[in-house]
Image 1: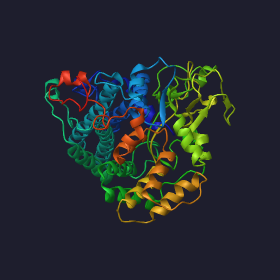
Image 2 (image 1 turned 90 degrees about the vertical axis):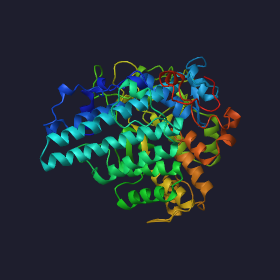
Image 3 (image 1 turned 45 degrees about the vertical axis):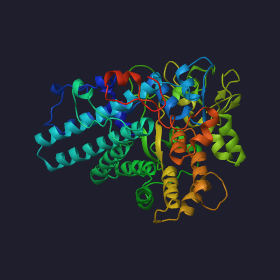
Length: 490
């Protein structure tokens, strides 16, 4: 069943939120009296809560797209001019430490970490209560999965904020208020350790649970993290393991990757699962990521959203300039056009362009009110990125493995209908830009490449300040050990 993991999560969806850093529930939201640790069938429940904590609610999705991509040169704020002033401040780099979009992302990722910590601690209790070999295997696998989720949370905290506190166990509010930040190198070490543990124990596949994270997910995430650490050998090695496995491949159609048919496909290694469960009303484990980016003011109620994070003219010019027709058709949803599925994007829409990669045809949008994109899975890591990770690492000096960097680049370009070009670091970086446009990586890639000043300077980016977002002022009030971020007034 395609959405099995989200169905499990639906039962405990309301158990995964917290209002701020210090309100992470000390029992991780799930009452201890409600979980019988002697029953193997309960093992998945704390893990399911951790998965559910990743799913973006309406406000979270808005703040997520603001922090992850509106700050890049690929995307503009979108919507109406006066809507989303906090996102506008991020778009032009005039934000300060009181920005609520940034504060929400701090809470969002720490909440995910808290849920993962609870799942890990729960596995220790299951291990004490369960004696069967099969049960203990399930415990080890589930603990590893939770560590993938925790690693993903801390990787994003690291690239958004830089040095942050690392919390790997349940703590009281008093303990949390005394936490000091870990260095970036320490955080990389913690993330590596979680992913290494997961690689050892999490299965390579889950036949009954499409969308559930595997050892390949852990390798894929570690390959990406290693690029940020400039650990080229590790980035290449993990990517090469995935390539050699033969378990993943590029879909023949670039556009299909982002349609419903592309969910949990051979190209996806990590996603945030979402589903309305086929309902039009009621409770469902939906994600609002696509809805937040849907065409604003489109007449059909199930074909409209808030209209944030729209493609910039600079991105369109970039794709046009390199003859990137196939990718442009999938990435850019243009006002006044009709999609191949027959959906109109009205001339009444506020913005000239919208994110085509989150387009969901109207026949899937059955929710009773503004149902656009409620079944859309957020694509976090794709096989195309693995090929580009590999090529980038090899071009930075890592030893080649099963294929050459040229082979990896050729595969990605070939699927996009582009001719072969000689491999170089610049060519790989440009291909990454075109392939992953509007997928929440561009800003962070520019920073790690040292190109942010050059590319984003004209948009307001200040060197020595905007490489990271400010630690929220609300969090510094709660914990005086949190430092002021360079360049920001508190």
